[in-house]
Image (tube, rainbow, N blue to C red; front, side, top):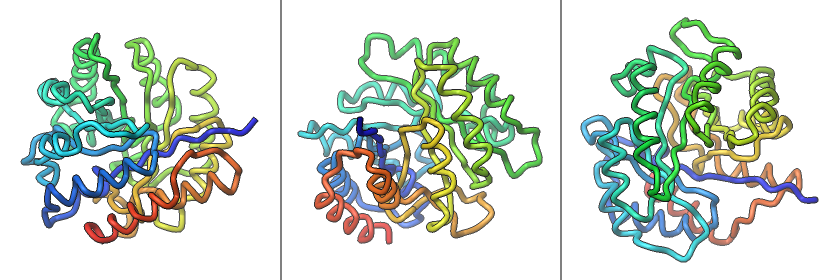
Length: 285
């Protein structure tokens, strides 16, 4: 039986750190091209304060501009508060609300101005608010493989937080290597342990890396049961706190290459992807 692999493209993560504002029309045009590729999900915008992420200040206009579409792709947006979730709920074409929860207390404070416990409470409230909406909550475990602050980190800490979210009824968790510190051994251990223990949760991988250093982590995750991978065309984006300016997102084109090399079914239209790739290079490159 052919294995299936879900590839998620993340233009939101790619664009949000770009200083010069990308026009709303360019964003709509680029997302329209991405929708034709057939990605499982497209991480397309943010309902975090525009003061924090000015590049995503036009997310509501972008969502209106996309409207409904003839695509199997789902749309995901980032929220970091109950207010952001309320705003996202107004858009029928949004399928997932992604919340950045950090395994690192310091990063949680820096990223969302909340403690981990406060963030957990927010997620609990958002989870209740989604009942009957047809939308789902996706929790990102930022700093899932370590942090640059010298804070305590180990595999057991990630497992403890996973249990708390499982008890809350969360069914989607992305393990994120925010600053590109993960090694294949820790990647293997976490996916190997968590996937069988929590069959009701879909675990995804959101790795940051240098452009040509994606393989060890992606392969370690896949070989230990992960079938959902986030990427961004050309590896654009990433985290400004990474150890190198060369660190970005896992390149979407490399995820496609990987899927084809292991003969996993990705279901993407490669001709449409070429058009989306050219579009990304035009507005972000």
